[in-house]
Image (tube, rainbow, N blue to C red; front, side):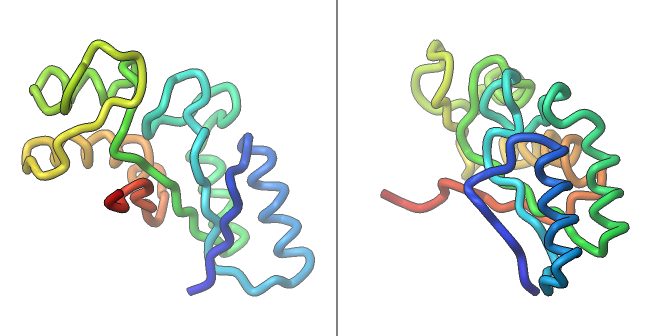
Length: 141
């Protein structure tokens, strides 16, 4: 399994252009990775910004037509305006100060929090055909 990853793609168009270029050059590749910042103005979280990534399901479909899978990075931290933060905060699953605008972390050891996190990731990613998630920033410091 051979993926391609770069620091991040800035838009749906940029990611698809890179995929097309890999294919036109005959680069043996199985997957392409969308690293961070795909959420844009929505805030740090696992949701696609509709301005820079309109119709992400279509993007996944186009990649599939090129015989490429999509892996997307997700994080254990989120901005407070995201759907994920609101759901986890309502359930009491945010760690520490919940009054900051970003850099909020959730209780990843809680089974209930895991279910909420998966539900949002499923809605944003798996339900549109994303093959896998890269759980970024999970390294202990």
